[in-house]
Structure formats: C-alpha cells, structure tokens
Image (tube, rainbow, N blue to C red):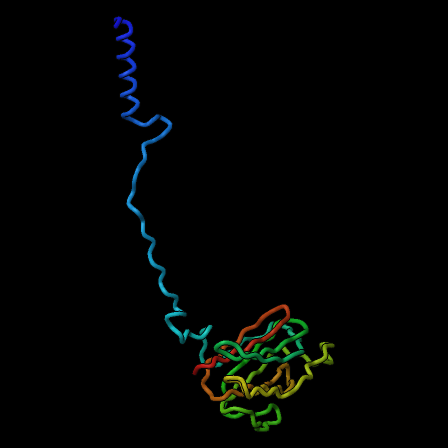
Length: 203
C-alpha cells in the first residue's frame, strides 16, 4: 500500500469514528424526564352534598328601599313563579322613576286605610308596601287588572298574593306563605322596571 493511500484511509477512519460519538449539530441529543401525573379531580360540592344550599342569602328582617325622587309609577302586572329553593313574586311597573318598598312579616294583615283585617291564605304573612306610586289618572298608565288575589296552593311556600290598591303614593299588597319565618329578599330590576320578592323554601 502506498504512503498516500494509507494516509487517506487513516483520515477516513478518524472521521467515521467521530461521527458515531455525537449527534449532528442540528439534531440535539434526546433528553428524558420523569413522567408527570395529573391530580385526580375532586368531587364537586353538589355531588357530595345532595342537600345543596339555597341559591341566595336572606333573612327575616324587614327590608326597606326608598323610591327615587319624583317617582310616579303604576303597577301594570303581578306574577308568581316556583323555583328551585324559593318562590317568587314580581311586581311590574310603568311610569317615571324607580320604585321603593317596605317588606316585613306581620302578625295580622290589616288593610290600609280602612283598618280591615284580611284573611290571607297561609299561616305567615308578608306585608309589601310599594313606594313611588302614582294614580293612573296622573300617570296616564292603566293599572293591573288581573286575577286578584292570586292563589298558589300548590307552591312549596307561597299561598296567596293580594294586591289591595293605592293610598298616598303607596301600593299595598299581602303575600301569604305556609308558615312565618321563611327568609326572604327584595330587589329591583330594570327593563322593564320590577320589584322582586323571593321567599326561600327553608326556614
């Protein structure tokens, strides 16, 4: 073998050994890592607690909210509804301003201003006084003329809604429930303007 051929074979051998010892520059050596384990999902509160809490906080204390200044509203509809955990009464209005309210449990339903004692269905009574009310002759809006009282004997809690009429800027109504002591809440909604009374099923 000539000296030149021997030198070429030596260089080729060196290059071949070098290529087997490390990866190509554009192919980084593979890395390994410990497998990760995702935590097992925790059971939801609803599945673990069949008797889930009612959907809102409430109590039995009187609830009051003033009407806006210069409010002149007419009650145009009264509706009821049964929901999961509570019964609802909705008073709808038309006119100007924002209604207010005074809602509380009373021992006796007394009609105002005649002071007549009313027989309201159920063993508990909520007196609802709506504020910011104008006479239909002044507001130009026809008042609600639906079935009155509204009787709901098949509801879990609500038994009756009796709307008594207007007096000195107020509209009086009584809400009969099966027993006194059910927590309740009152709030206003807009578009259309409404006052909502929710009475929880628990006590």
